[in-house]
Image 1: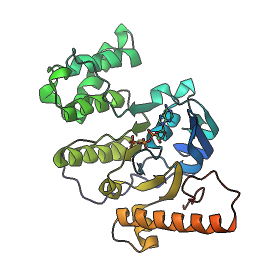
Image 2 (image 1 turned 180 degrees about the horizontal axis):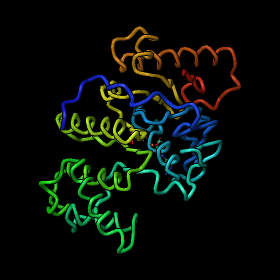
Image 3 (image 1 turned 180 degrees about the vertical axis):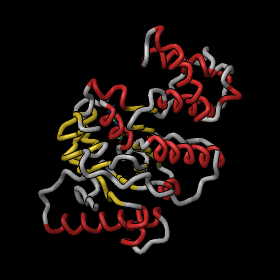
Image 4 (image 1 turned 90 degrees about the horizontal axis):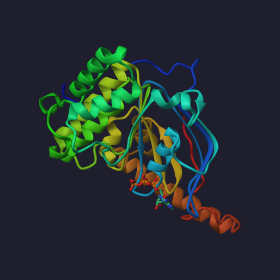
Length: 289
Ligand SMILES: Nc1ncnc2c1ncn2[C@@H]1O[C@H](COP(=O)(O)OP(=O)(O)OP(=O)(O)O)[C@@H](O)[C@H]1O
């Protein structure tokens, strides 16, 4: 694998305005239990780029991802994915999704895990060779060739995460939704995975939506959705965010935006006591394009 730079390479191509964005949300609202977890979000995720979804634990990142892949209940508002309503059956083979917990069978080897999922995606005897080639390529992509015949149960946490990622890469999906794929990994593995994400975006022209609560990973994304308490604080490039907030890092920019949101919330609370929907008094959203 190549060495990653701390700044992301340019996207393969500028976003094509004639095709709809990979994800488009308007007034996206999600209720879980008795709580409104996502609060009227508006955003667009452009195609062919890496968009980072960043925010503190519990702010709603996984909920937004589950909504995008169609596994979340009680979703209202508009949510379009690759030009179709989220959850549309036609999207199943076009999206790869990796949850936070690696979903692999411990009693199967790496290759057997992939063979199993490949057979579901692309069944039939006629597809044997195509499946074999796809599985071999996915194992190479995640750098697990030397462990292809190891039982998944005997792998390290990072290696198991990469098996999950390899499963998501089968079938060359147009959109990859990765929920905290680097959590718990050492710095070298994190760097290698980010290299892989950039290769996937550049060579396959795929769109990647990647969540993280590690702010230094933000610098590796083409665009960022910064979230806090179920709302979007900012939707912009890392450069634009740093510039706009006069900050050296995305982390400092994020803190600046949080302070701004709290100050604006305090002001509106002082002037208007009727809006009790926002738990921290933060504004409903601030979307910058
Ligand atoms: N089944 C549920 N019922 C009620 N509330 C829930 C449920 N699942 C999650 N929540 C709440 O929804 C909010 C958003 O959760 P979510 O998992 O989307 O956050 P997150 O940003 O992905 O967090 P993390 O980074 O820790 O994974 C949290 O406050 C959480 O407590």
